[in-house]
Length: 425
Ligand SMILES: Nc1ncnc2c1ncn2[C@@H]1O[C@H](COP(=O)(O)OP(=O)(O)O)[C@@H](O)[C@H]1O
Ligand SMILES: CC(=O)OP(=O)(O)O
Ligand SMILES: [Mg+2]
Image (tube, rainbow, N blue to C red; front, side, top):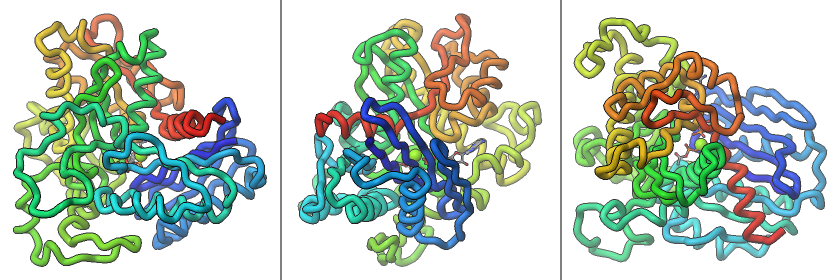
């Protein structure tokens, strides 16, 4: 069996697979930082809440303990573990670590400063797994790998050379690569196309959200950058802001703080932890935002970009829609590149917790993309969120020039697949 772990910013997800990568069990610690819960489903079921201030690493250890006990797993049952690490810099393949791992992990940890909410915690979690399973190979799989195909003019920032040797080149790396790879596979198969002939625009909207333009199976643009901060706002991330704003917002921007055992500058901490939905309306829970905003026919949305927002939730929602629409429009434009979008783009895909669950957001986004002839059928859009884990579900009929889909991302499946092929097991 293979276990894949996915350490996100607000969740730790796992899936247990048999040797043919059929899912045997899955689960997650969710809402980390707000009201954490642990649930496991499969051969056994676990549903628990955990204390609010439990540290990320302790939540991981509690989850690991429950996985082994509830599912009655013995050390020998596990052939390999797979671990999503968001930032791998220019590392161009998965990395295998065993109990004799410390040098390799130290090397990878040098990149952790470039994904401060993710890499450090993922590596701490990996150490906990290696302690529990010292004889089992662990494979580190990177989000950044999928974006190694970014064209030079997209990868490059408009700035001169650094005055020192940075740990990695200061360029766009992107993130959510395991998600995009899994979505590409699922959507291509749904469309009956080869991956390298499939061109899609994907919005992965979770606690951290990003979008990606995939042309013939290759990432050609994505919204996250040198770090996962760039691009869309998230649960607690600002997304792209004028970079100088932070110098005016707080004094001592460069002073460092301890975050999960890592030194992070105050400026970077604020942009990662006190921005986004938390900064705008005090919660990172998108469900709460949806509950508090006026209905779609309220006058504040007409026209949506001019209206005065009646409350902070409506403002957060309108701002999110504004930024998301801006990126998606530019990616649809980029992939069309002078051709009829119908011939150039196979699908627009919604994914991640928000994209998979929010009927309202999908409808509002698609309405704003109508210039590209994208539309959804309301009854399909309403049904979609109930399909839960059905691969990809079509939201449009033939009227839509570009069909819209919901795709249940399978980052853990992709992580396990990469581990299996790396180890040849
Ligand atoms: N029913 C729902 N409707 C809308 N948004 C939801 C719903 N359930 C969860 N979400 C949102 O999904 C996001 C979490 O998505 P997920 O992809 O699991 O995140 P991550 O992997 O980044 O931790 C959170 O913003 C959460 O509020
Ligand atoms: C890169 C990133 O933001 O990941 P997640 O959405 O899992 O936190
Ligand atoms: Mg995630």
